[in-house]
Image (tube, rainbow, N blue to C red):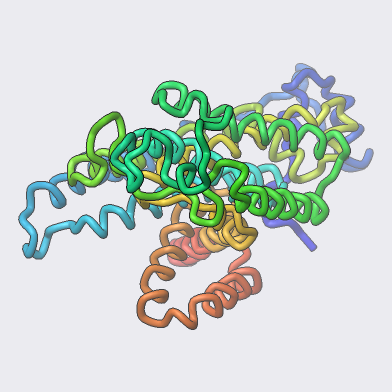
Length: 406
C-alpha cells in the first residue's frame, strides 16, 4: 500500500555530507540509480519561499483579524449590535486557538516525523498547571479562607507551600518553567523511548500509559496540585483583574499571535534541512540509518519542540478558561489532539489548525444541542476521515481544486 506522503529526497541526503554514489547505492536498485550530472555534483532543488503570495495574504488577514477586528468588535461595538463579539465567543475562540497550537505540535511529530503520540495531553496540562500555580498565588489573601496559602492547602491543613511551589510567585520564573517543565519531561521520556528504538503502535501505547499515570498522580491530594478539583477561582494576572474585557482580549490576542508565530516557525522548520531529514525518517528510517544518520537526535529534538508548544498552549488556555484539573491529562483528550490533526490533514500544517476549529466548533454546538450524541459524532468523524479522507479536509480541498483546474 503506497504512503500518502512524499518519498525520501535522495539529493537531500547527499547535501548532508554523503557522497552521491553512496546515497544512490543505498536508496535505489542498481538499475534505477539516477544518472549523475556531467560535473559529478548533485544539483539540489532551490529552497522555496516560506509562504506563497496567497499564503502571506492569508497570514496578514489572520493577523489583522486577531489584532484589530476581534478587539474592535468586542470592546468598541456595543452589546446588542449585530456585529458585537461577545465575551463568550472571545473565550471560546481563544480556547480553540490553544487547541490549534496543540494540533500544530501534533502535526510536527506525527505528520512530518511519523511518530503518533497519544500522550500530548500531559504536556498541555503541565504548561497549564505551571500557569495555574502562578495564578493561585496571585489570589493572595482574597480566597475563602483569607490565607496566603491556596484554599485547598488550608482545607488540607497544610502550614506552608510544598517545595515545587517555590518560584510560583514570580511571573518571569513561571514563563521559564512553562517551557522548561514540559521540555524536560519530554526529553527524559523521549530519550529512553527513542534510544530503545520503541516506535509504531508500541510508542503510542506507552505515551498513553504516561499520560494516564500522570493523571492518577495529579489526582492525589498530597501532591499539592489540588487533587480532583485542580486550580480555579483565578482573580488576577500581573496584579490586573483577569475577568475584565480588556484583559480577556489581551489574552485572546496573545494566543492568536502565538498560534501565528508557531505556524511560521513550523513552516520554516519543515522546509529546512532538519525538517527534510525528519520527513526522510518518517518515510524510511532504516534507509536513513544506513546512510550514516542517527535518527535519535532528530526525533528527540522535534519531540521536545512539540511538547514545549503544547505546554505554551496549556499556559495560555488556563487563564482564559479559568480552571485546570487532572482531566486535561485524560487519555481521551490526547486522542482528540490526534483526531484534530487527522481531520484537518496531516503533514500540511494548516490542516491541523483547520481540524481543531472544525472539531471543537462542532463539539461546542453538539454538547449544547445534543450532548448525548457528541462522543458518537466524534467516533464517526474519525472513522469517516480514516476511510474516506486520508489527507483530511485540506487534502479534499486540494483534490477538488485540482479537479476544477483540469
